[in-house]
Structure formats: structure tokens, C-alpha cells
Image (cartoon, rainbow, N blue to C red; front, side, top):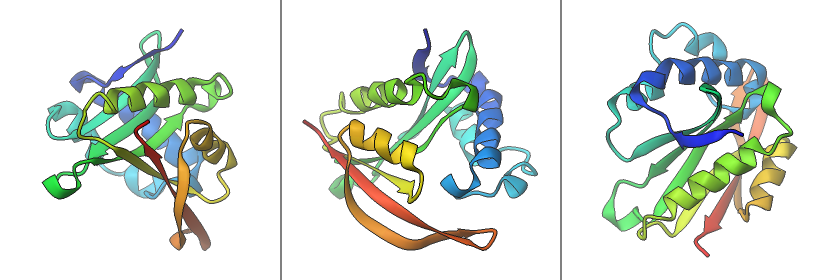
Length: 169
């Protein structure tokens, strides 16, 4: 049974490996380009994991110590908007798909986030056409609130982004 928790400082390399897998195998679902990120000595979020400071948290799903899924949470920094949070970089390794890992990881993260009484809303974006992710978010209670056409372009392909929101129950 997978374990769900915040990544520890010494797990930044596990994050890097899984993140690069996500970018390589699902290029139209994530903004950064695999070819660019693999050349970096350290990915941006590797540093955040190592520092364990600030309002950002990267949560993971682990199978016997192996990182198999991630979900990043960020709370709006400014007081006038800190009742909002955002989820990004939701990913489960290909070998673990179809086993409810993403659902369980996101339920874990949502429950953790809503322990903070300030947070009223969670938002996320999903590439139009990423039907499994879209269906997962709907199942978790997220509703659409916008669409940004031509959100990103990769290898000549234009990708629209669907924005979704979950309100504290």
C-alpha cells in the first residue's frame, strides 16, 4: 500500500527523476520542455524540497521508498489572496497508473491543505485533451471556471488550458 507524505530534503533527486519522466513521457501536459530541464544541474523545485521553507509543499506517493507520484501545493503569498491555493505538477509514474494512486494522493493533499482554516479554494489547470486528469479532477469535486486558449505551444502544437476550482465543503 502506498505511503503519502511531504517530500523530505534528501528526496530531491527522487523528485528530479520522476519529474523528468513526466516531462519526457507527457510533454503536452506540462509547461517545461524535457530537453531544457534535463540539462539543468538542479530543477527549481529540487531546491524547494531541499530547503523545506516557504509556503510551497511537494507531496509524494511512495511505494517501498520509491517516489511514484507527486503533487505540488502553493498558497497565495499576499494576505488579500491567501485564502487561495494552487495544485500543480500532479503526476503518477506510468507503471502505477490505473491503481487510484493519483486519486489517493490528491485526496491526501486536499485534506492536508484544508487543515489550514485560511484556505477556502484550490485551483489547478489541466491541458485540454488530458481526459484522464480532467476526469480525476471532476471526480474529486473540481469544477471548470475558465479556459485559456493557446496556453502553451510545444513542438508546433497549441495546447489550451482548462482552469478548475475546488471550494472547501
